[in-house]
Length: 154
Image (cartoon, rainbow, N blue to C red; front, top):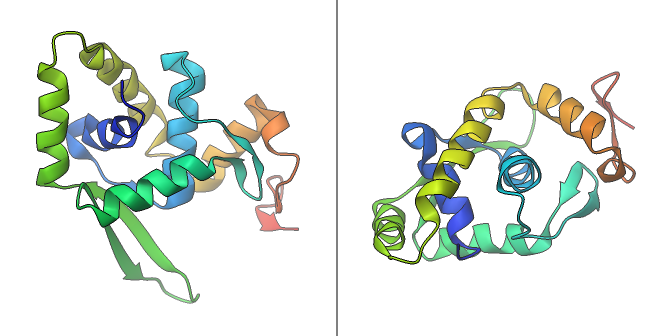
């Protein structure tokens, strides 16, 4: 599968359920690679919020700039940060349909794996998701600015 199709395919699964926040998006792709796809599309390093991939971050930005993904920014109560929600656009859907029709593609099998990851982790509270990732992949938490046990920044 083309690397850039992975974020699009993840957005398409579970009836195109949106993904809230870049941190969650990054963790879902990380977990898909580690737990179901067993393939490395993106390399990760321990970041401030666990597994971080600059190439994935850049691809998500490019996919948004090119109209495959739409990011919706909504103001939140109390703090200065906007809530970001990622959704697949019609252009992204058409791209995935073309990829699915490619005879040598392993795309449909990959979608089943992504569906399971998104179903399991996308609905989790972000702290719960980070706690899971930090617990299962402690090497990815070594540069974290979060104390998962208290739910606060260090």
